Length: 107
Image (tube, rainbow, N blue to C red; front, side, top):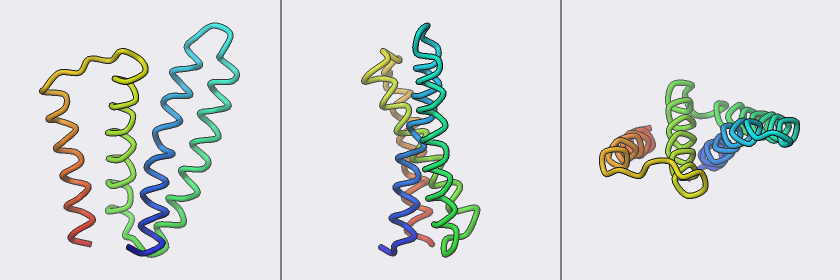
């Protein structure tokens, strides 16, 4: 795995942080902290995506980045915010992850 793919995977993981920050900002008394958290994760994730795109095509990197972020945010929501955990929802996220793996294997 090249450094660009490590950047991309890390960017995808950081992508989870900004929706969490926005969720935090929904709570009275945590608005400013939540927005700051969201902005910090947006910046970090975007910077790593930018680094990854030096070697990985834009379409591939964007799809992988959003896929990791979507799947991670889904799991975070279930674990920490009581989001629904139905079989159908897990199947859908499994399809997203299968697409991410396919993009990596065919790059």
